[in-house]
Image (cartoon, rainbow, N blue to C red; front, side, top):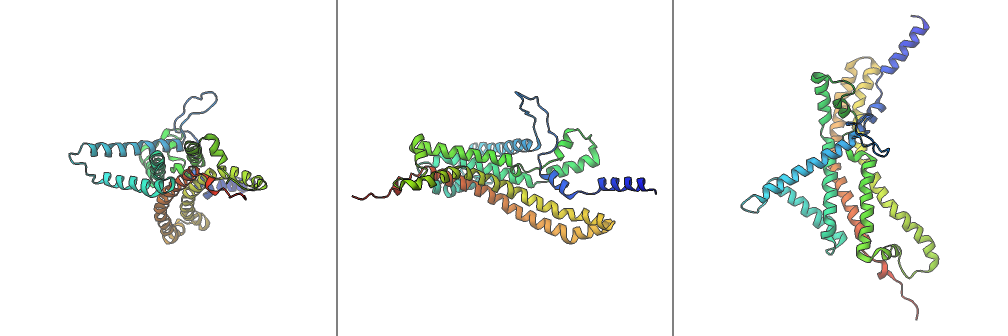
Amino acid sequence: MNQPDHADATEHGAEGAFDAGETIIGHIANGEHPVLHLPAIAGIDFSISKHVFMLLLVATTLFLLITLAVRRYLRQDQMIPSGFMNGLEFVVEFVRDSIVLPNVGPKWVKTFAPLGLTFFFFILGANVIGLIPIFEVLGLVDHTILHTGENSMVKHLIHGGTTATANFNVTAALATITFVSIIVAGTMAHGFIQHWVNLVPHGLAWPLYILLIPIEVMGMFVKPFALTMRLAANMAGGHIAILAILSFVFIFTELFGTAMAGVGVGLAVSVPLAVGINALEIIVVLVQAYVFTLLTSVFVGMATVSYTHLTLPTKA
């Protein structure tokens, strides 16, 4: 083989080599192509991406489950919840009485309990659906039976991440709702102007306000930023860890030039670790829904409390 042929073969081998980083990003990103193309309006692309599709799937699934459960409950002769409705009632009471009520108080619990319940169910639903290998099974069916083209909707559904809450745009939108809710809560409790006045304690020496006001203003934006990063990073981190561990199979196959090496590493290391992390992910999906709802309730409750009780006494 002459030198140019050898260079071409090396380049071809490099192109066909397994790229763990590209594979991982491809399984958590929003997908390269929209699932459904829609016309742009005023220069804004309204095409449905993979994560937008997952948001619609989560919302539709939750709507159907809760609506059907409530309708079945209302049709009963005896208003005694059972089965799925019993579990649903337990979750609703837990979020209302153990998360929202202690933080916003009895005066505002009926106002902000729906917000907390919406956050909890939506984030939990998105996290749980992200753990179900729906599109992996669809990809297997497409590879063995359907054999659709590269530009088909099936191919666009297969590529990209399945956990909508691992997308920073999604978590930023949820955090923005929390940010607006904080302002609404403060305005309802104290009035719009007084809400901003209450950002800092009253009665302090004026030089302290030079330091406190910028800190409190930054704190307003740090809260939604922390919510955004915490949820997205935790949900994406688990998937990245699982995919990185499973990538050992392909890496060792190419490293030793035999599939047996990859299979051996997979059975001895990758599969047990992936199963363990996946089991941990089940706990994570619950914890993240709880933490986001809890922090939102805490921030909203803080907005309803005035700093006037911290006013320092003046000298006679």
